[in-house]
Image (tube, rainbow, N blue to C red; front, side, top):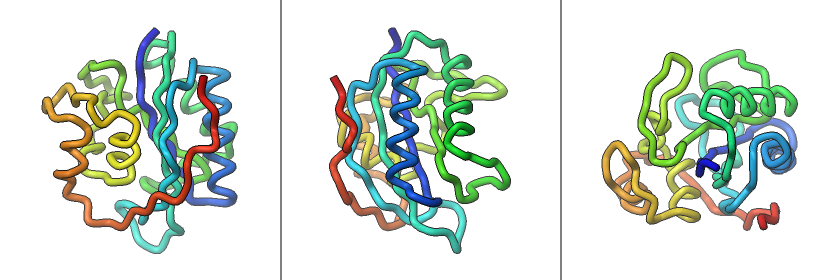
Length: 167
């Protein structure tokens, strides 16, 4: 089993329901949910004139190798109504593979760790909440340290505990 961290976000429709459904489908198709962060409302990143996002991070154990896990992630996004129209566009559900164990690699379709996670509070805050001591394999800083050093100036508010029960 591999330890992975996934970032989930939604800014269309019933955002919290999309996140809940995405987590349920991931647990059915990809592995065992171990931890889920609280729910954060955040400013859209990289674009303007969008509704705010709801974001959270989940830690999972999965038997799937990275590209197979990515395929399952893309399928879950589709099942939740995701349409890929524009980069950083609004979406019902976005799922990013943030970490896969402590591996560091780049493939044409996937880079691990996620290449922009150190620049985004909507990822760093929920990551630090559930795994503040986890060390980023590319820069040797903990997630708590990365959160404190984040260059992101966008607003972020923790609005709820996760409503997904993990074993």
